[in-house]
Length: 271
Length: 271
Image 1: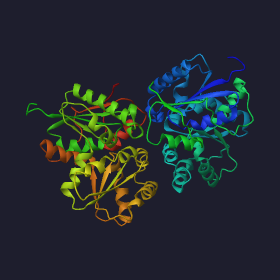
Image 2 (image 1 turned 180 degrees about the vertical axis):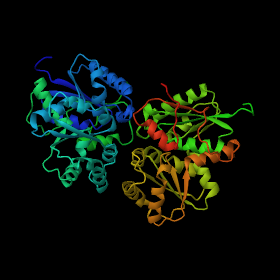
Image 3 (image 1 turned 135 degrees about the horizontal axis):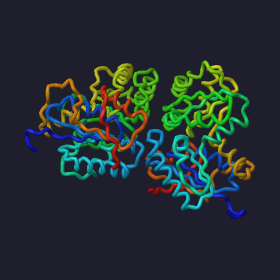
Image 4 (image 1 turned 90 degrees about the vertical axis):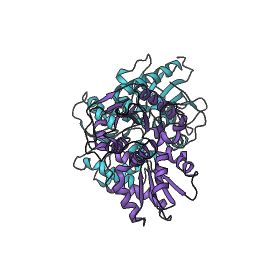
């Protein structure tokens, strides 16, 4: 790669939740990188699919990105990171959500009791537990929260109903002294106010929340030596490319909500 | 078809909600019919997909059923019935959820104010409004309830959270004098106790609920002259065939919940 050229980063998710990762990366590396985002809406959500299907869909997307000559591929989906990352073939780095989040915990957190919340696929895969086995003295407590994604997609993330659903899931943590919570789903940053409020009322003050987007942004700087910009106010750039494998009536509205900005150049492709 | 042979009925849905339709049909026609059920779990849920994709997936399933020499095909999915039924090609009758439900309203209900609740795809398609245009004097009020499917899949259909979600959606009906409510999603019969309670508290007493499974069972008797058995206590029969296009860790448990019985011979196929 020519040093004067922008680095080309391909980001994918089964849906549009991965736009929260795009947002973190674009605001951190706006000057030094251009982005391709692919939402595999034809197979959304990955959380309901088998490992074999998720690997197949993910490899197709990796091949698409390789044809587009990306320099780095980001799996902005915890379900795919959990079950497919190790199976994928590419001659560029592929970075999932799990190792960056685990490394951020290990580097920055004093505490050793870690809560992990995510979809059924992510939690059942035990991918975070396995990743923490490389480090001593971390106790992992994980809870799957399947209704959080539909609650966010409905736009109800700050309602009393969202609060009560979160209480029902997170009360499992009430007897544990937690230090850190990993948001192991790219939709969950949208729920952060409700989550903070519930954890606070459960007696967990000053929790450290780990968000996949920020963790990956840090990982790209420390592990791949990408130059961090002063945070850019512009998230979107005309050179960025957005692809979806299917459309649904609300995908434009959802993209807008995850990003806080309108994407005008979304292309529909078939893989 | 030989009169001594059992009629062969193929039933499909994007997921397992259509098993509520299978249950109605199997308990009505157990002696005279055998059943094939296909859950297109690889593309679940159809409610999030485009019309083009739903038509493509549905035609593949129709072709699979035709190769299996079924006599009738039932689309036990309101999303597919709403947007795909008219596009599908087959030389056997294909019956969706919409006309049977509409006919049941027209035949049996005195009232003329009809509530329709369903997924976004079904409600946005306005398929029920269009079907009722053939009949005078029906006023259709429809509301999409996207969280009802994930609430049922989580097994929370009889919780206070389900009640509150239902209140939030159904309060739209509070100023309308309703006679009948069409459950325009095959998951919704699982929510019936919560729905009755909410409608009752909104002042809608003695509502008539139309369930796709019962409506299709009646339709097969009146339109295709199938012989109704005395209700059989056995739902499952060893000759029935069950197919899915993908697996997920919870599909056996879900199948059991929708059916109230264990299916042991589910086959994984690729279409």
